[in-house]
Length: 92
Image (tube, rainbow, N blue to C red; front, side, top):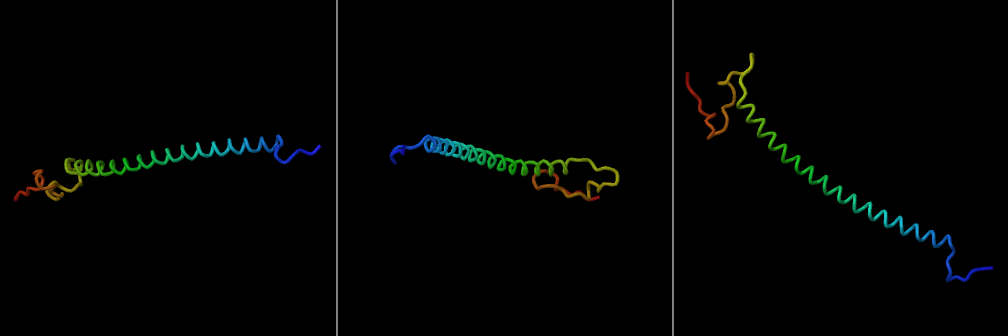
């Protein structure tokens, strides 16, 4: 009733099949995770660019806004960048 060594049992064949299936699934998961990682790095890189643009628009907003009550007067505010006309200081 004993089986020869070269024949594998049902359990061994099923174990090997499941091990191959698990290995294949892990490889697919690894590939998907790498793709997700690349996309996240792209998004993070883009947000850094938006921070620069947002800072530029904030500077523009600060230069253009009208003084509120109790706010620093136009003359006391920074005068802007050279070449924009905002750096011209008038004498009273």
